[in-house]
Amino acid sequence: MKISSEQIKKIHILKSKARLQDENYREILKDRFNVNTSLGLTQAQASKLIEILNRLAGNIDLASKKQLGKFNIMFKKVYKHKEKKEYIKKQLGYYKKENYLTKKECSKLISGLEEIEKWKGAKANEK
Image (cartoon, rainbow, N blue to C red; front, side, top):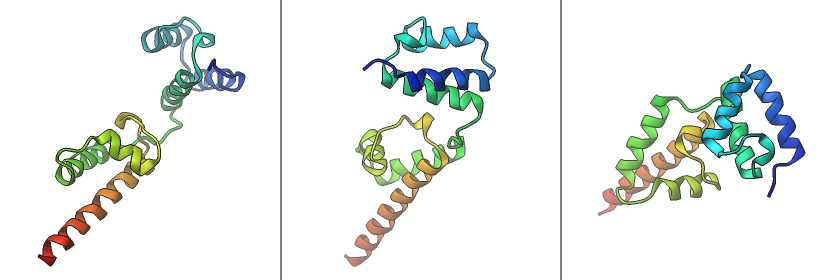
């Protein structure tokens, strides 16, 4: 589906908040989405651009490298052969790339892994 008028408004508001020069904005559009203007975006692409601009404007509290590191270590410990994408989608109800996880989302993923780890430990002690 084509970009909505609400998304177009939001993109231009965020572009201003992020103090993004037009040249840099166009570069993002071309490099990330292979379009010259926001009108060429789909709704899904517009949502991704809004996430990018939110981050540039400082509006999203993204997970820290330390928090993402903890998530990755725990995931490898708990699930040796499972795809992270599957786990994220199951826990959050949607998939999101790790770099775009908020602190709250990452905390939820880590809490889920901690619960699974406790359950596995309790199960091992029963034997």
